[in-house]
Length: 113
Length: 115
View 1 (cartoon, each protein chain N blue to C red):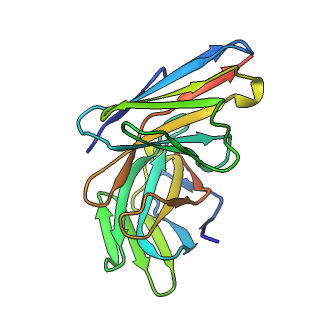
View 2 (cartoon, rainbow over the protein chains, first blue to last red):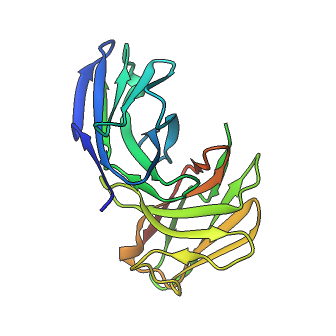
View 3 (cartoon, rainbow over the protein chains, first blue to last red):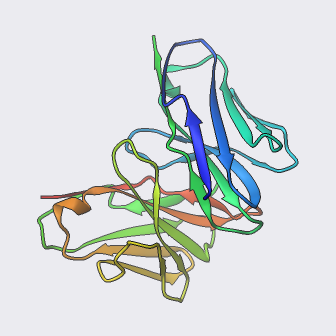
């Protein structure tokens, strides 16, 4: 069964600090892995998307890594801002050209002043 | 990036009434659109996949007669919740597929509250 596990479930950090969110997956066949940011009451917004051959991808203060061998990904947020407070969802796509997505439950990040 | 809109952003209705939610891809054509439901503190759950001009494919456990999906054009899909009940209260999110990765671009969601 395809699964995506995220940790921690929730996280509180001080403004300006860095943090790293984790994602482990058991999705086969693997196509790509995406990180989304979802503000409360809003739809998910794409941060990064990585294919099998990509180890790291950055989007501003967000840097995602992918280890396809261990089936792990991380999302690193640098110099956090209050606006980073949201849920971060790891999503894995199965199979080339497949629409099948497996969603993690997300990590709820709270950045406090 | 690609923009997907939803309307309305929130709706409150009485039990037994029907509610229609629109999903539009504003700057690209989407042959495939998806409807998700998200309960508080839960992940998105796929309800159905709709292809333009054909019947939607529903996930197991989703009643197709209750959640009517119409994908009449490459930029518009609608979800109608028929005879809504309080347990249908949820956050409904659509997405449209496009780009080289068949990436799904999500709408802002519609909060449905059934009294």
